Length: 413
Image 1 (tube, rainbow, N blue to C red):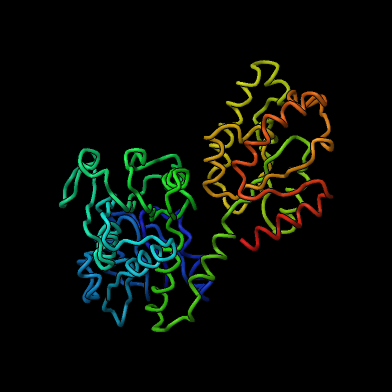
Image 2: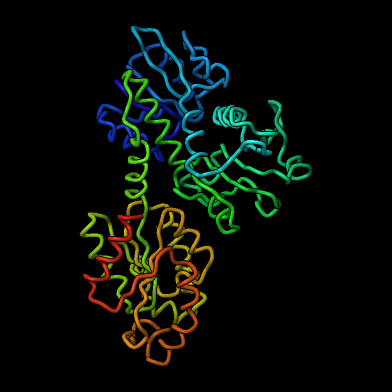
């Protein structure tokens, strides 16, 4: 191993792709069990590495030299082997500060609550302190290490201005997790989540739904990765490198989610987009039937409630955690708030707005079997489609024309 990232579980990590974008094709991910960490660091069989959960503090005794900033924080996420001597740095500080700036969340003079007590929480504390926060509190389940318990948080500190999550709650593969109940906080002016997979955690989506400025951890990951690579190779990258890699990475990971009425062209357009953009394509209705029962049979046996239940299960279990995919939804998929949330974890939603006069009845869809049924559904659903969509795409043209409009928007976003 020459370069890479070590951690206990790395199936969610994007770090290899970030370093590859910087030209380091030798960078790999290596999962290290807790009982093997000491031996790995004693062997020192690497040039330089990043360190992630849960080892940012555990590596400290193995380092001969620790950068002053990392020493002050008490956590290291970057180690360089210089002739057998291990030097430790904390580029998470740089990344967290860059993330707050990117999200346009001001910390100066504010009351900041940091969820978690691990290495990243210590970094967040140091960043908030450096930016002039008025008051900084850390919260942990046990209340150890000068932290509050969550009960104490709710009892006396729901007047927080800024919330920073450094726990793994809500991280892939457990996307539904929420570290706190945002409804209890009435003064929040910003929410940051260090989790970057999914792109939008449940916490970030909940903040957005309340109109609170919020951003997940991908920009932090990229910014700290760029800084780590500079330390690895004793170099400096041009201004704008972080922003470019972030934009490319987000676009690469984000799903294109197509919503709209039956026969609005979601599947046809979706397949065209997938081919053009070299992405996988899935049709949620096809995924439902792949479980062994046709949609018409599900309706016949249990009516619409049975179908919606199966649809929700497929979206949560098979779709929500996907990245870089084109997804065609069923006509009523977005009627459920939970479905919308699951689609938004990693997706940008496009409403294919095809004129009612061009929608065609179809025998295999019980809720769109004739013109009357289609018109009823259209009137009911149009406000919902408009409300959940990130972009509305006129869909009266050819599939190629509609695909062009979506491609142009997606690439420009």
